[in-house]
Image 1 (cartoon, helix red, strand yellow):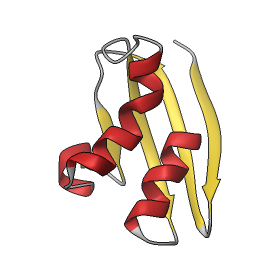
Image 2 (cartoon, rainbow, N blue to C red; image 1 turned 90 degrees about the vertical axis):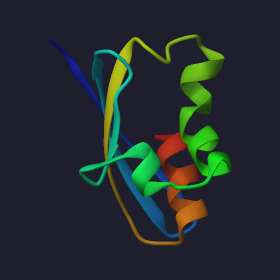
Image 3 (cartoon, rainbow, N blue to C red; image 1 turned 120 degrees about the vertical axis):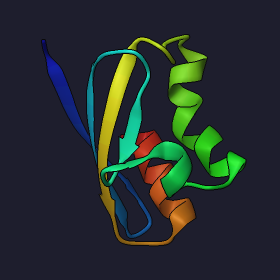
Image 4 (cartoon, one colour; image 1 turned 45 degrees about the vertical axis):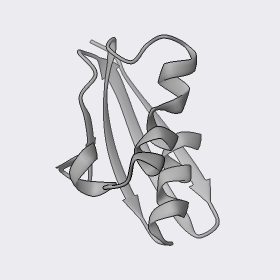
Length: 80
């Protein structure tokens, strides 16, 4: 199984994103997406690239993100 590693940056936030085949599980800093980004807007920003390409349930995503605020972090994840 291949794992794709990319880095996304937004303002001072940096996200290391690991994409692998799976069932749509998104983990950010070892926490579920809904526990890390509690608002629907931030969750939408993270899921947007997958939704636009109809791949929401085809890949698992693991993210290590640091720096900046929560909005900058969500956008850094999206850019990764």
